[in-house]
Amino acid sequence: MSLLILGGDGYLGWPTAMHFSSRGYDVTVVDNYFRRNACVTLDSGMLYPVPTLIERARIWHEKTGKEIKVVIGDLSEPEFMRSLFTGNGLTYQWVIDKKFSGEPETVIHYAEQPSAPYSVANYKQADFTLINNLRVTNNLIWAIRDFSPETHIIKLGTMGVYGTPNIDIEEGWLDIEHKGRKDKFLFPRQASSLYHTTKIMDTDLGWFGVRMWDLSITDLMQGPVYGIDTEESTIDERLRTLFNYDEVFGTIVNRFIVQSIVGYPLTVYGEGGQTRGYLNIKDTLQCIAASEKHPAKKGELKIYNQIMETFSANQLAELTQKVGNKLGYDVKVEHIENPRKEAEKHYYNPTYQGLQDIGVTPHLLNEDSMSEMFGVVAKYKKNIRKDVIFKGVKW
Image 1: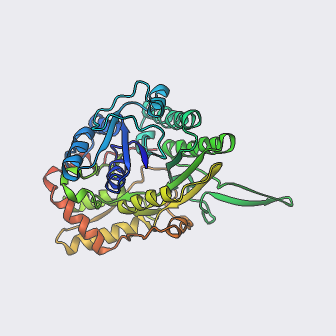
Image 2: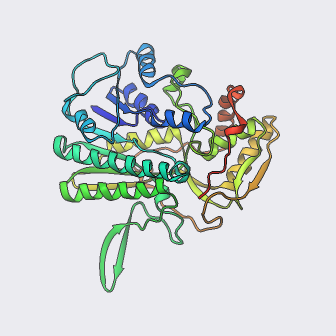
Image 3: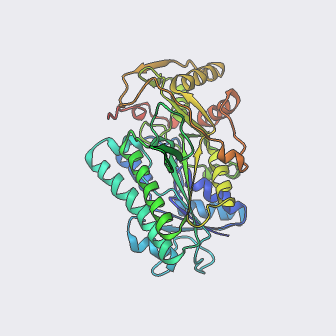
């Protein structure tokens, strides 16, 4: 099976590439190093240095004998996107087999600016987020339409598109009865950042492609991910994924663990009642793999809510404090002024059974799993910079 991963250098993209390569897929990854470059520009914290994508592919081949092809380029440029399907002008930065793979059976689309705080920090970053995210998705659906209409797209969405409505959140769709008539619509969406707004528009672009051109798309509404190691990264620590602990690119569980280890009070925003759905990075890989094995049909937009359990910020802080204290850290929790415009007390009851129905077995967040993460992060304690943990991006 031929698999194309857009955004293959990222927190989720690189582990996904290894996961499929280890199972015999012909994997090509594409990236433009946006996240790495943004971390340098913003002076954000990375827990440990990460080899370039080309170096990672070489290490992977050295350790496993398997190949991950690497292409470096900007997917917001239409002709570059199209070259991935035609081969015209395509340049591999790392490849052993020079043969062009042709039409991929599956494209996994991670290639977007992934941070809500980044998207609202200033107008330039807002503009980049909107242009990059929407152009990449638009370029992809047109390339699939024109050159590879049988290809299944797996696109990463976000639970953040739903907001915190005062009703149960269904898996993407809602049946409506109005004035005696019934129909099915995309679930109402109310994003709280420009990043999340682009994800709403992504779904709309995909839904357009499905209705007009019979594309096959699975949209995974993912919650915040935590974790470092996956089955494949244990082969060599140089294969570990990117790990940020700042407020811009770091997710809350990862940030809290880092803060605990260096004695920085856990930054709980406001009252801490904000509740979201979470999942282990290992489960992201499970969800992608299950979606690849159970693709949407032609002319279908299949939507899953990709979370495994829900927590409030207070519950995550309490668990982190409990585990950290048991491990000998003096973990303190600090409620700070909320830099975000969001409800701190709200109803939150999303449906998220679909992925488990097709074979995903959750790795739940508990004291044992969090202790393992503490152990990994502690090895890099000397690399952690307190000054980049929180800078207070407001919106």
